[in-house]
Length: 287
Length: 253
Image 1 (tube, chains in turn yellow, orange):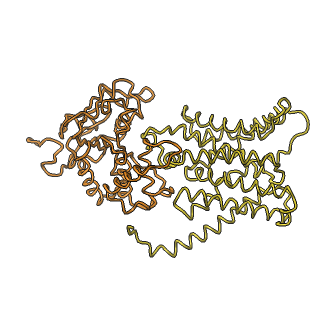
Image 2 (image 1 turned 180 degrees about the vertical axis):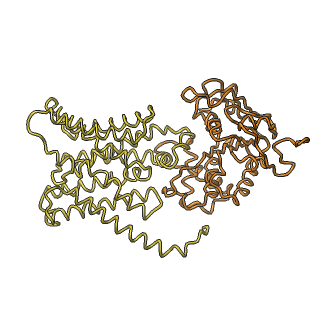
Image 3 (image 1 turned 120 degrees about the vertical axis):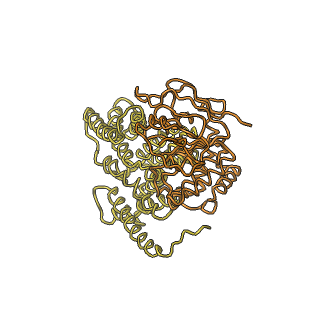
């Protein structure tokens, strides 16, 4: 793979894309896991398909429009809409997730169907294909990464507080609802950033598996983010290499996820072993 | 100097048209340690949320330290009821306490030295300073509750509200926790919500009973009629010795 990395532009792009994706996943995935937002993230990622379809359809009329830009506009709106919908009505969150999940996908299919001409490669949006990532995709990814990092740096204390105890945050006078909606938007941006790469169906794995692995090794949110990024990068590099070596024609997304699951499995076994070893010696002594 | 910290004037609260609180009049002074008892669903938490400005009255007026609750709540320390709580959450004791300072900070800034000093002081006050690096879930229920009290104290409040703080504290630890409240009441008025009437009655100096309506005589005594009205059935009280009676001594029984 090193050879390919040195010689082929597409491999270099894939590598950089993987690193950029791992950064967003590590940071946002940490919130998704600790704040138990996995299902809502699944809903957002599937709803983004609506944006892909709309973008594809509008590209006939608007020159700069692409499916990714369609998703970039549509996905945060869908996430915000769902967040406010749940707040304002008495509909349970998981019901709202079910609705947006399917409606988003149906919208996407409808608009793609309405667009005359050749149907795009849907498979690459659903399951991703890192090897078709273009330099302009990389720039979009880097900008989205930067936005995510700025928001999380700015709101780190506040997001930690509402993730831990939303009710107390409200009692303090924090704008908990707006913070939550901000978090939903950041998840939406992460989804868009990842869609070319692992595909919208597999995104949820990269938002959860590296963080779930990291969680086994630390009790600090900050360290969890760093470790998630590292595990995410390891998954991407390992998965890319595997899919290159075995030459899997259905894209590298699946290999990346299987590789991250393998890391998680090894980590789980090691953690259990460590806990067994220490369970007899642990004393709750103060410092 | 005795002053009024909370004033509720003919306050009504409705959820979806159903009255939850009816015509509540309550005055809390800065030397009060008020025990608020009453059946589940009687509106105890709603009453606290009224004071915190989290619930708006449909009628009547709430005044906290002379201001409306949205402004006044910055001077309230609040210990919410913690039934659901992710024990695995990656946060340590010091970080939990620091969140109590969030109303004084802004986005983009780190916690200041003053914030950290206040957190250390609050942890010292609840005797949990030695545990500041511990992940919160590794503590016992009683220790966690002390940390949540520290989180409420860290904003240097003028009023402390505790919602069922004993629900997650093991029975042997409860006396110790009451001792802590006993110390805190020297410095600030406290409102303690509980369903455990007999335990509360030992420590508080005033007691009120709430079930949609408030039964309160600005004292430590409730009449059997109050309790019967509030609980809709006769209540058998086990008082802890004569000085701590909730009910008046019954002469002819």
